Amino acid sequence: MDTILVVKLGGSSAASPDFLRWIQAIEKSNGKVVVVPGGGPFANTVRRYQSKMGYGDAAAHHMAILAMEQFGLALVSLGTRMVPATTRVELAEALDAGRIPVWMPSKAVLDDPSIARDWSVTSDSLSAWLAGQMPHARLLLVKQIDVPHDSSIEALVGAQIVDESFLASLHPATTVHVAGPADLALAGRRLAEGVVPGHEVSGRRQMLDAAQ
Image 1 (tube, rainbow, N blue to C red):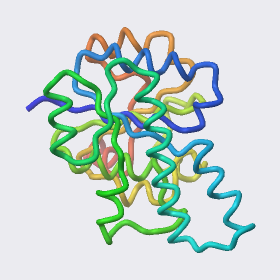
Image 2: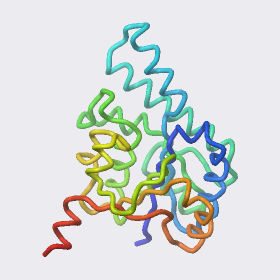
Image 3: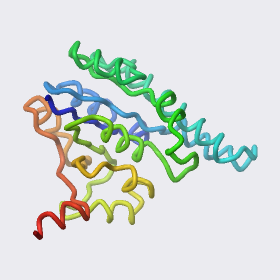
Image 4: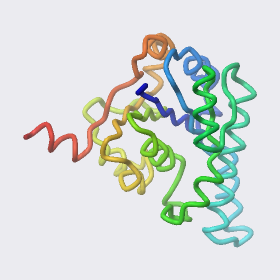
């Protein structure tokens, strides 16, 4: 079975001069890629107005999921191979057609009662959750900072580079890679060659396996 690379493209990249370059790099991939959009400025608006308007965390969670879809639609409009996809069937159909599906998460996420409906869950955790639903999937987190090569997943959580629910959402079989600005120059070439940009980060499971 072909390996699927789930790429979480953070909404914070929207304000970066590298934004369009990451889209172009992702679209050079010769493998199967699914993009998970962040919430970006749309989710920030939800956060900012929660205290002003007084809506609860469950409503804010729902609104933030819709913010991911807004950012996803922006990605689709700026790409050439990207298409929106909601269900597993739509994701598979897009991949089989050589397209790059951008996941629209509201249906799957809001239908799953195991996913917390508060700010402890962001698009990072949801990208881990989605990767865990796909056999042989790898996860690439595109960040706006360069993470040290010896970082662990636990360190990323502790530094709030990923959200607090990330570890609980991550399937033990999913490998996690992180790419930052320093990886962008070669990202398109690496993806075209079937190589994941950035570097793999280890978790407790991987470190225990290596020690045995």
